[in-house]
Image (cartoon, rainbow over all chains, first blue to last red; front, top):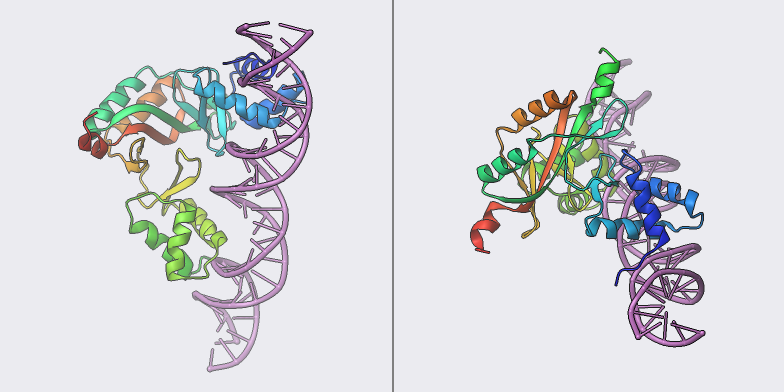
Length: 129
Length: 129
DNA sequence: ATAATAACAGTAACAATTACTATTTAGATT
DNA sequence: AATCTAAATAGTAATTGTTACTGTTATTAT
């Protein structure tokens, strides 16, 4: 049976309170502000559980480590080569693209992980060139 | 100045001779058949260099490790949940999708890493259900 | 209150990758 | 052909992200 734990709540709260996409280490550091002796293993376990239960989304970023996102609907990300941030992209036609890809290849596509690399809109605006 | 090395040639040849997408360890094992005392570090270094020079393509697969592909034009991959293979997808409209995404979000997209998860066409054919 | 066990902290183990160092070797220069 | 220089190497150590293990703590049903 699933029990309440302060540690899991803190982990989830950290994720919900940011638009960034922290990895386990960053979440661990943040969590220690609330629970100074929380264990890194606990953070990893809760992230896996929350991700397995669909409460959060996990994806591998360009740095190779797993990053987490409290927005669960799978959506493309942009790794900005200028500010190095990972930005959520709202692309309504991504499902169309997925379906079309499935039809074209004869595969059954259940999920996707789409990561773009380039300059995010903020960085594009702020600097000409 | 860039010099010839037998080790780099072997690594590249291994990649060019397969349609699979081996990771460093697999390439290392294969390379030892030609050069028994080749070092794992050498394999890693050459894979980075070849990837930096655009001779091969690197991408992270669902197992979290870097996989390599001698087909350099970036193209989507499918991780088959049935046979666990990583399959190249030939999707001609992927550039359209990328451009549309850039326009829609205001970002400048230079590259993409698109990974689908599901059942590859072979596995779909071979098993009803 | 008590008991059962989920979740924990802390640490060890692990796998993928990178860094380091002394040695070898490609290839340019004599 | 002998010599020189730095690119590349082999072998190993170190680092990093993650998982596994063990004894302890704490949630929640009774």
